Amino acid sequence: MIHNQTAWQVETFDGWTQTNEAATFIVLKQSFEFDNTGAYSEKIPSLPLVAADEYVAEPATSSLRQACELVPFKQGFEVYGVLKSYLPAHKQARVLEVELALSTEHAPLFNKRLRVTGARYWQRTLFGPVASEPQPLSTLTLDYGVTFGGYRKDKATQCLLENPAGRGYKLKNKQSYNQALVQVEYANTVQRKPSQSAPVASFGPIPSHWAPRVQYVPQVDQAALLASEYPFSEPQPAQLYNYAPLDQRVLAKYAANWQLKLTGLCAQLPYGEQVTLHLPYTTPNVVLHTGLNRYPLTLCCDTLVLDTDEQSFSLIWRAAIDKHSLGVNSQVWVTDPHGEEKS
Image (cartoon, rainbow, N blue to C red; front, side):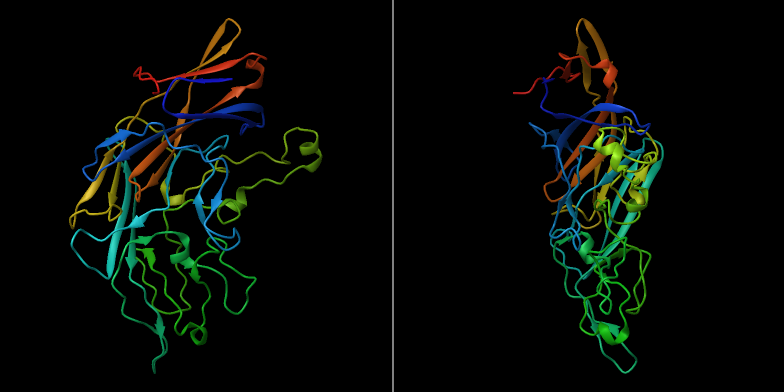
């Protein structure tokens, strides 16, 4: 069905639109690698599309290593990735601030700043538990295991639904001694005592069974599912398949001249410098061939997946094809508007 004349990854699958209509969905992935100057080049071929959620360990107690990219729709545009923090070149530190910022040509869209701290532990004193001095930092993976959350020490069945993989949730003073503190927090928050709660601070994708995503999952209609009909008893929310933290999502439609700025997230950068990526905007040429008819498809880019360890990023585009437009011998042709075919 697909004739892909590009270096991009393209796949189709069947599903349901947000308006409850059966459709075939096309998803396209463009991947790029970049350096510390912000220069980038296209990866040939692009990275494979991720067909299912991939967890670091057991799904009940760990976060996502990769998020499924074969989903039918998303709301707006989002950025996520399991990122790492890096010390400035030739420097040592015990505390570091990192930042991820997205902007249009004229205005900021979001600016997220987190504080990363070397390993600390709650110590016993006459005045109660206090945090030890932080140890020197090294490269740290900023996943959900090092930020606030986790399961209660005294009630193993209770967890913070926003982050079951974290640490420090409802920790009592008597339970806290020698327990590790969180290493990643929002830059404007400080955990001063074990019982203090904190916002979950990560750039990574959120699983569907965590809050806030779990509240958007519609109830399955088993009879309809068995009959291959619309499988839910209610409409699908627009944000059902959005993975990014709420402060990494925007309602704006992806367009030319957007920028992504990275601070403390790339290796071997001099102190105080950041990487600015002037994001590409190459709209794929996708045409549905049905008999003698040709139907151009308009794909929407709704996701940027970032990997600062590999210094790469991917843009994901998608569109729905009405089932009534498809014939037995329908074909989808994908070409690069720049005319560069895959090698």
